[in-house]
Image (tube, rainbow, N blue to C red):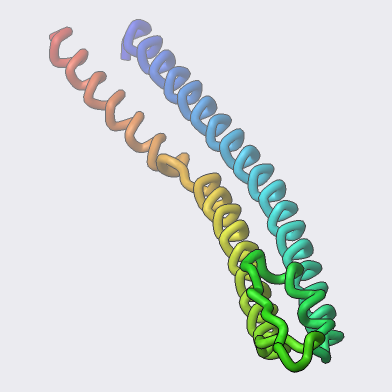
Length: 163
């Protein structure tokens, strides 16, 4: 083998090593960024779950304390923004024409479900962020193989053209 061929081979090997090292470094940096995004997302998911649990527990605690019509009417704004349409009975001015306790309990259950749903939606959005962070355009070895194929074809064309 002549010195020129050896120097071409050495140059090709150096280029391959350089491209492989660069590709490995890029893959490593992507992985580090993905891990950081996942950790940040997990912190958000934990905070969302904690906040949701606190809201649900507050609604459950309030629902457990409501036993009378007066208490239910007073607590209604905590679980519903809808007007209660309370109408006093003509014979009993302190009584209302609404079944307030069952209505309140139903609204409390609805609010609990709504709060849980909001927490799940926020958690799902964070999980989507985690999934996006984990996606990549191929592994290190796939890129190395593709680069080697391109270089081999180029070397073959160069060799044929040189002859």
